[in-house]
Length: 510
Image 1 (cartoon, rainbow, N blue to C red):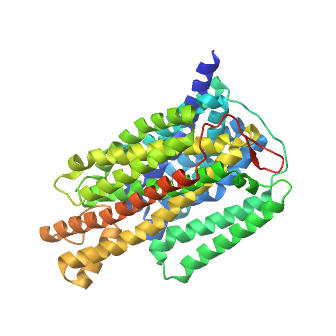
Image 2 (image 1 turned 90 degrees about the vertical axis):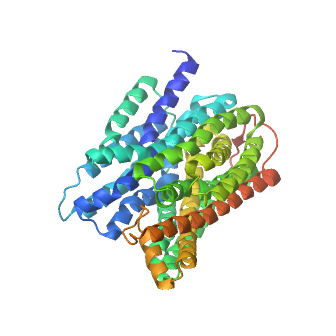
Image 3 (image 1 turned 90 degrees about the horizontal axis):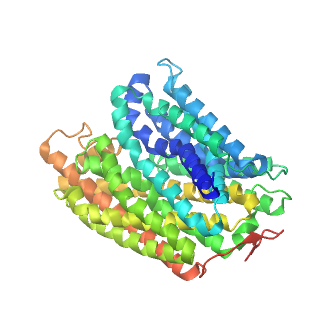
């Protein structure tokens, strides 16, 4: 088997390995009503079926990346797949009894653990399988394909749920088997860097990220005026501050804080975090808009996202080629500009409900293309700037920052959406109490009718108000992407990176 063919077989194996984690980000949301009804889950329980998975991801990405470097990346991918697939099977086997809520939440959290152990190792394996001059193209394929799988979730979830909601978890098992067979066939690298694992740092960052993301996730439930929201956020930030101080003094830290002295790495991480404020929340808000304002069915909402990933997938490949030829800066500058304009024009068309996706699709593709131009080059460039022995650690850092950006975006933009929707409904209906009641019902529902307003005039007002509210959110997303553009123009280093290593103190050198 040629080296090139072997490298692409490794890439295929890693795509199958992480495919489950991307699909699971969206597939479960579609089936939540059926899961809640059959298992008799509380409203809080339903939230934690979704949030438990995301919370464990946020808390353990950094630990997963470090452990991959220490015990071997192939080992951690296999362990992560086995944990994820086993937890998926047990989620699907949730008994319809009194223990159902605790059972499914527990195994959703364990799914997140498996994903957090698997993903940094998988990215590190792909990076190490290709020479530096070919990594842009390889990672463009990786992020292009796995990113598009996120939009498959709503479509697959809609069809699978017609059979049984349990199948949305069981579908992960054959995918896991294929991934394991491909890993056995391709034999990815198994480099190890034995060293003590900083368990104190692991506990600190898990607690800090966990509490911070918990406060952000629950802000929509507890409200921003609730002490619980701010206690979690401030406690999380305080613990993360202690983590930074501790790591800077540790002989074998979980994360070498000095890696941020490399300006390019720091800029890559900042752009990835900012981009995630728009990119990940987009899945939820675009799906809600297509159902509430355009009147699409849940399974059809995935088609709306596929338009976005049409632009994303193609532009990801362009971004990879630009990275290999000229470095990350041009791709991030062009991507930021294209995404900002795309989101802005998309937002302008959102209130044209009659025109629907037909009037919006060029701008949806444009927004997707902008994100696609940024994601792979920024991620790959950041990891390139770590030594080969620390690819897992660097991936853990970038994914932690991306996850925080996504959680922040979901919390803040979600709150703005709810507040703006109340204002817009009150303007259309003219009755504040009635508008607040309908807005509350809509915020808890993914369907246009929401069960609260059977009158056709009210339904039209709901669709119009939500379109206006979504327009506000997408204007903000355009602004965030414009900030990405400015950051790249001002701070991203010029030129193609040939080779980068970290010295003993963790500082970057070229």
